Image 1 (cartoon, rainbow, N blue to C red):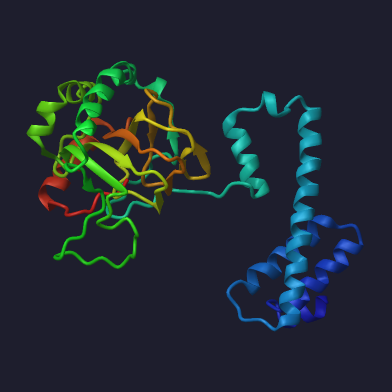
Image 2 (cartoon, rainbow, N blue to C red; image 1 turned 180 degrees about the horizontal axis):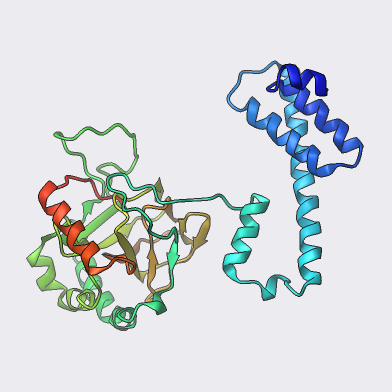
Amino acid sequence: MDSLLALEPRAIRGHIMKGDCRNDAGDKSAALGLYKSALRIAAGQNLPNELAAELRRVDTASTELAAHFEAQREIALNAQGLDRGNRSSRFQRSLNILSGREQIFVQEPTAYYYPELPQIPYFDPTSFRWAAQVEAAANEIRKEIQVLLNKGTDDFLPYIRSDPNLPRLDDNILLDNRDWSALFLCENGRRFEDTIARCPNTWNAVQNAPLPIIANSPTVMFSLLRAGAHITPHTGTHNTRLTCHLPLIVPPDCFFRVGSEVRQWQEGKLLIFDDTIEHEAWNNSDRDRVVLIFDIWRPELSEQDKQEIGALFASEQISIEITK
């Protein structure tokens, strides 16, 4: 096998057979590495049925070997007093990634990337001094949107809307679809005075937050997700902001994922996240879900950062399709 792999390092069967040899010899670590290399080399190839069957066997063997190493790791960590109850969430996530239970998700803005910002999917609302004031207004905000909902949802617009002057290459089923719709108080910096006048408590509450008041920002809106609707995985346009959800009407079986972590909205409790990390949402209930959405400056940005970013957006007048 060594001679074969020296001649042809990407021989899939060679990696498999060498892995079997190491596994039989009790060298499980080397076996796992060789099985994984065989799977990586084979990815995307059109293979003979016999080899494809071998790869399925190898995939199963890899899963079993990974579980073996994870069990050994748990024993070693527990012996050092680091059982699951004594681990930080950050360390546990590193173990989840190591074992393959979580993927690595990073910022992937569709329009503008600002370097050297930390890759954090969810932020702790208690670390923001203004958050408690927004949450305290949740009941009054809910009353305002409920009054409008009682009159119907004709004023809600599809969140993803087509524009004949802009190319669109995807086939998102929510395009021009009211299953995911929005009632804007402010859209990309454009104020809707009539909605603001009908929802004064809502507008006043978000003024406590550090809204990015620059070209094309901020956005403040009520987001309605119909019963049974699914917002497919996507990323936002620029990573100089965070997105805030204030859940107002949340039936059971509504879920939200950012990166590898799935959460449920809790009425009146803020969710603050980086929308340039892949995220998606589900409403698996039989009732509509409504949240207030607004964006804020990232807390890591200095005043100089904000000034420069604002100047860029103003000078470029960047035309972007906001996606959250």
